[in-house]
Image (cartoon, rainbow, N blue to C red; front, side, top):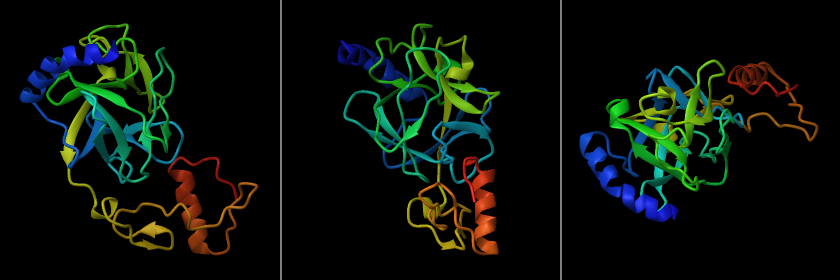
Length: 225
């Protein structure tokens, strides 16, 4: 039934693509809120998918086709992790994970040029113009991505602006780490300091202390030393 619906949607997908950005597996993108193009989806290392103001090394994505119409694995270039499933109920945080999960993406030109809806491909309702469709939504206050009703023209925060970009070279090559920080993009080497079995980091010098502070400031508030 789901695949039948996807096939029925293909003419709409083709029409929408002709009107704006086309997703290309060989290119790279940022994903920001339809309501604020400076608020970017990010994977900062937390379990929950973040969305906050400011372009940084955690803000770059690629779309890997799954072979099903309009469906992709959405991978963060920095962490190499994937966007996980979207709940079929409201106000549930969307997580990141190491295993790819198929995401259905459809252009929503009525929400603006290069705007798209995103949700899990296994949902019963994939019609983004329906309030019965639960999609990725920006929880502005908590600065995270959650599940919420789509409803084109009503719930604008359930839609996303895609921009084709050229990411920092190290995100598609290799980082140049010095004292746990990439000289090119500022990304942190998550393995710079050894972490003991009890979860504490073994800090032995000033560089490691600076690295630990940066870890906490980027959202890893569970880090202990």
